[in-house]
Amino acid sequence: MVSSSLLSLSATLSRLHFVPKLSLPPALGSVRRPARHHQRPARLSSSSSWRPPPPPSGPDSGSSVSRGGTASAAGDDLVVLGIETSCDDTAAAVVRGDGRILSQVVSSQADLLVLYGGVAPKMAEAAHAEAIDPVVDKALSEANLTARDLSAVAVTIGPGLSLCLRVGVRKARSIAGLFSKPIVGVHHMEAHALVARLVQQDLQFPFLALLISGGHNLLILAQSLGQYVQLGTTIDDAIGEAYDKTAKWLGLDMRRSGGPAIEQLALEGDAESVKFSTPMKQHKDCNFSYAGLKTQVRLAIESRKINAQIPISSATTQDRSDRADIAASFQRVAVLHLEERCERAIDWAMEMEPSLKYLVVSGGVASNKYVRSQLDQVVKRKSLELVCPPASLCTDNGVMIAWTGIEHFRMGRFDPPPLADEPDDAMYDLRPRWPLGEEHVKGRSEARSLRTARMHPSLTSIIQESLQKQS
Image (cartoon, rainbow, N blue to C red; front, top):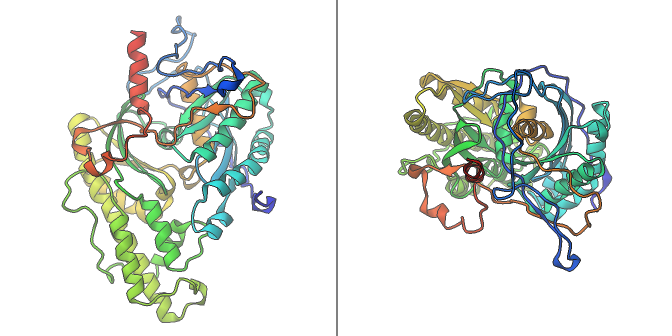
């Protein structure tokens, strides 16, 4: 069991006052009991089983949704608990339907990341299991609420690490079952995109989103509620993975993850000193690749005989200068790759949606100020507006899960309360590899297609199928 000393709970964020927008959320997964129990599984919605409630009627009977996402204020009194355990942070938050963040709590696994040089799934699962109860309890306490006061519970069901996802889903179902609350399954990457609609009142569909983190590089066109077109994704490593590996090889302090460490050291370096090649220059699409850049960085470090066992704090002046130059040069090229892909994606998106006005940039790497400044130049050249959530809402958090749950709930996409006596060994339909949108024809990659065999159908395809069955 991971030591309880690893549990550090962040201070509750100040309450924010924003006007919410609506979204068409995904169907939930299912839960299955092992066959030996011979019991009927709890009913959960899916593309085949979900049925929406009858549409509201009358002037005061609910919110209405347009393609632009404009909605009435109905549902502002909703209170949703969001739980996030998809990777290496245990997070929970309580959010109201009017956009107020009542609480936000995060337990970091930074010490484990340093110890293992990255995410170790079994250790991460153990840390989640130890942290989940105090994190959720603190989120409710900071909101001055009990579970009985909730309208629903929202939880990440994918994509992510199965062992980690299971911890959050088990906790969410336990609360929902015990207090007879509806439960909403959330797509982790959709939540990263939709949280921007919590913080920016006039963000309407269609919009383009770049979602960048340790495990994901994703360019999507959000055409309308629940309808996403995938313009590009990574064919190997994500940008966050490249930042983490570079930081580790340079002997940097990984307790805040590699991104902030590289960003800080890069300020001391010459970004033109090491001539790294920009990835995939010959590929005129919107996909990403960082494996080759990682190799270039490793060779540059070896050629300068930098010893990662010597921490940056103990490096000589020349050694520190060499490391700073590599950090700055790496960051310049890594972000240049983002810039080039985003420029092309904007062109593609404008062909499909000429009214496009926004580029949303979210995910952990979107906290990087250099990334934001460079992409801001891109959107200005294209006469668009850059929308970035605050840094605390870019990294994995419970607010984005709760807010996406609110949007789902308003559209009638939620599951009834699960049974209160579900067995400990219940098998959940987790979705570790779960595409967000349907792939754009220009964005298909043969290299990546070999890895799609075990993917769950995309969120967009599930929604489309359910809508077709309703008509």
